[in-house]
Image (cartoon, rainbow, N blue to C red; front, side, top):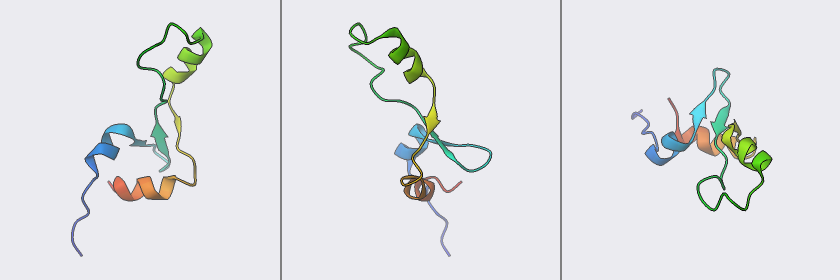
Length: 64
């Protein structure tokens, strides 16, 4: 069985938690921030979990 290669683009965007779930950041928080509400910008700063439907595909991309 060959070694699995990590998808480097996915490795930069996602992290595994201790229990094996996948963390991600929010989009829409890089530019054009003056028109966005403070609450929206603050909530975008926090990470969240990937949707369970997408998790298996991402877990294959970051096996380690």
